[in-house]
Amino acid sequence: MNERSSENGSPPGSSQVDLDTWRILKKALRTGLSDRGIVVGDEEASLVTRFMLEQIETSGLRVVPVKPTSEMQRAIKQALDDGNRMSIAWVKPRTKQRWRYQAAVEAAPNWRRGYLLDLGLDGGQPKA
Image 1: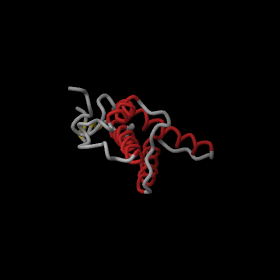
Image 2 (image 1 turned 30 degrees about the horizontal axis):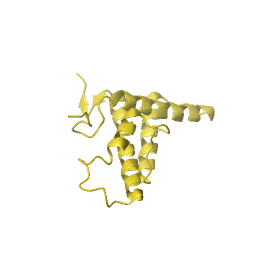
Image 3 (image 1 turned 135 degrees about the vertical axis):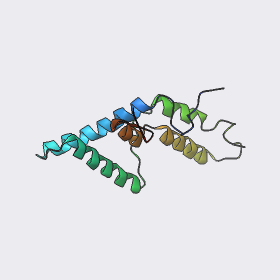
Image 4 (image 1 turned 60 degrees about the vertical axis):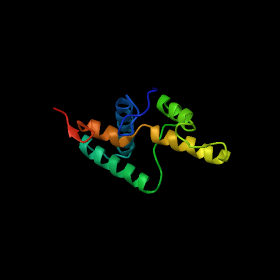
């Protein structure tokens, strides 16, 4: 049995990568605003960053790393696994590329999970 994603679809051990991704995006926004003379607190930066990223996703875009993570590489390799596809012999190469790309995007770090972890929540449940 090989190790795949957990029940909620997140790669195992991805929470720190998600948190790091969220903090990098938030820091980039705060730095950009401070370069223009606008100083915001940590809570306001979180809200503005979250709103900005939600608007990006509403437009059909997704923030993913330029260099694929190991989880993304693993998902690309497993995208055409015979266990995942009934028959891939007849599928065009372009469709196979789309499957690989979609698997990589789904395995990419998720800023939403990082946002929840940064708030002290883990999967919507407050930490004790």
